[in-house]
Length: 186
Length: 428
Image 1 (cartoon, chains in turn orange, green):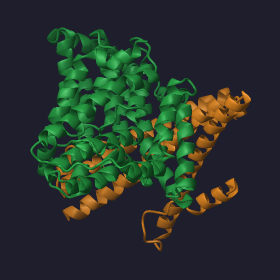
Image 2: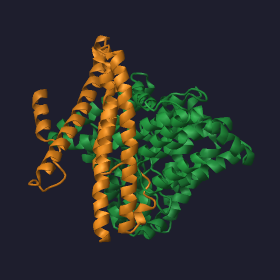
Image 3: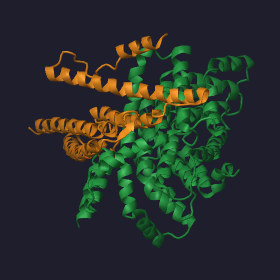
Image 4: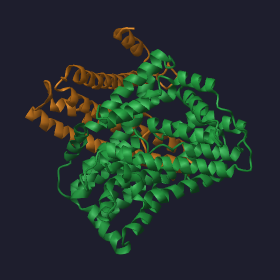
């Protein structure tokens, strides 16, 4: 089986969207497409990482040389996978947390607690995104290179981007929870 | 006043279920803000994740573990262990411990062992004649056995956190891998002996060792048997670094499961990749956030203050270790192992070193406690996973696992107060 064939099968079988109602509104369809792009990036990053890391070992042991910037790129890929993976985990509010109390709360207080923490999460991630963006802007002005001819700021740009997305996602979660809480009370 | 208010709010938010990485980021922000440091320093700290070559091992081993869990590796592993160990008295119980420990070492204690292996072992144990309560307890306990064996992800994570702090003596991840071997074996031996003793009045028919079955099971597993040997052998033999071992493992496991056993279809790969990376992404994010908060904590000399505070009440290494055990057991019951490591190691390690605890030994103590924390009522994670998987009430599980927990506590006491057990293999 050739690599191209393998790649084709992988691309054809990208994870299906979790919400089954494929009809959906325009907005929902847009969200599904965004999710698939996100999944695609995450999977692509992992494949690139596996191939590069393996190629380095292969080259180093058999031909006693490696791609000079290969190791740096793989390390930066870890950062990217971490952040994009975290974005995907944030979709369903799947981040590790202590659910010591909320597990036992009745529906309405739980709703209120959830919306509070989601707003807080959104705020903290928003602040992180803002200040990271400042930092990336500074790095852009310096114009250092990370590896090959890739500038450092391009490697770092995932930090503000990922946090902005997580902030947005939690803000949407907050809004939908809030509307649920209001519905429950009326 | 304000620091206390902030601390109170953060504790409240974390108890209400805010994601842990957010709490840690907020701590770092509050700290930097108070010291008048521009908050864009957080991005610099997060970017430090790209300066740690070993981190590569985490996503790669996680992905390999997910692949194995989705294939028929669990079935093969159980068959192999049964064929070779099943003839012994208490055979199947020992088989369960060994198979689960091996599987957890490669997949991490994320509950996957209970779901994948427990589901095979539980009916087999009952069929052989073990009482229901014993079988359930055994399977629940085994879900986190094997955390101390390489290349378990929590073990690697402890090493990474301890190394980047740069306190105490230097040690390598390989040292940590060696140190976990004997304590991990001790736990298996204790559990096996207890299983034999508790079933002494309950005659369980012995199965004869069958050469043919052994050969068949061996042949079936032939592609997976080399894996632990070449990961561990490759690392100790100096053939490759841990992150390289992880890359080779991924390629090997992919090749074997997809093209030789053909149990994972190429079309399943994207979903498995996504699932495993979302899981490790959550952990990496907590780690990145903690790089920022840890730096602040060290600048503010929090561990030093903590040490002074504890020293007023606790004198001597032994007393400290007792306190540590109690604290970690409680922590292990509340937090999952990854967050507990990332949050607590930066605080505990400097204090423990001041009390004269070896950093490698501390890692083994930490993980041994966490492993038992998984079983600690009322909220240890294994209890819930087993309850869900085997459709038992949580109180039934408490009763079934408590004897196993006591056995593990006995092993923990030996591991904690006999540093030599962990460190003897390190002295060359």
